[in-house]
Length: 245
Image (tube, rainbow, N blue to C red; front, top):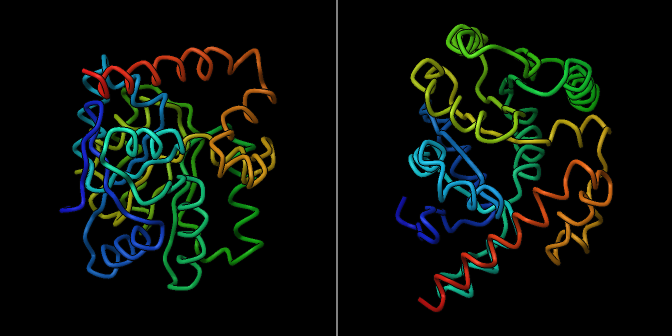
């Protein structure tokens, strides 16, 4: 990729949503594998000390800025990104592309009832033909390779992994050779919860103004306060330190 920037020890591709979709579509058409990852403020903070996560992210084929805070930081640091490419929006667009192009998708992650809900919704919205398979996100480390082989043999063109960081990033990085039959592999975090209707997504105006994290926080304050309030403070500190150092 020639369109890359680097901020806070993190490599990010400077592509719009449409450019990203075009690159993914080309990879599938050319029968190549593309390992995709998104970064937000919290993940970038974790990458400062978690060197395995940093390697798993920075050695991916395509890296988008998922969080609006990352786009703002890129502008503040003189390396402006075109726009935010939210992981959930990319996934939704790619599911539509799969239906259009007769691609198959494997959905991996979340609780059993959640991943089943995602498969049911997309089967109803489009067709059962886009489903290569699904599996919940609960497994032991020693099961990883067998799971990767099963996914690779499922006939999937795309794989969406809805598991928390850094597990999903490391799973995809460590098993991408075993997943070589799958053209596009991507971590999507909590996106299955949103698609299945367990969690509501912030209104568009909040998304555009970088307040999606706050909407998520007020839905589950006990679980999210540390991730967002402390994480956002650490991210701001890192940006200011790089700006004025």
